[in-house]
Each structure stands twice: as structure tokens, then as C-alpha cells.
Image (spheres, helix red, strand yellow):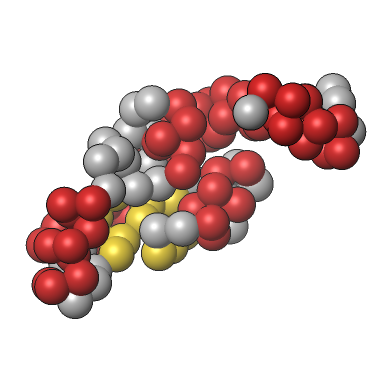
Length: 114
């Protein structure tokens, strides 16, 4: 697919690993959003942005999650250079997530650390 709009969550990471340029949007109940703001202390909502420590995937959260802002950003992803910038970052992300170890060995090593 050329691009996608996804809700914030695992699907965003799956799109990134698949190399699909995308944006995320999320709008929660205002009370829930205020509670989350006070409890969650991370800079980004998208898992790829958190892992890469920069905003590779545009995030439209709460008041920024409007039809106009979403459609404008999605239209921008149809530009080859903009999409390529995301795709390049997704290649870096896949390298960060890749291991030569089996999942079982990785879990054992993790448990040995804690």
C-alpha cells in the first residue's frame, strides 16, 4: 500500500516493520487523556518513534487529531521523498529489532539481567 492511517498502538509498529509509510491518530475521552498525560512520561506515542528516539511517524494526538490535519499529513506521504524518509527510518528500526538469537535465548538473557 502507498500509505496508511493507524491508531496509536501495536499496529503502528507492524506497519513500520512492514515498511508502510503512515501516520497515527488517537483521540480519547478528555478525562482519560488528562489522566494519561499525568501518568505517562514518554515523549512519543508511536513505538517506532520511541525506539528510534525521534518522530519518524507523525503523531496526531487529542486536539491535533482532526480530519484536516490527518488528510493533509496523509497527502504528504504520497510524496516520494517524504515516504522514502520514513522507509529509510523503518530500515533502521528493523535493524534495532533484529537479533541473531532465538526468541527463547533472548528471553533467557533478559531474565538473567533482571
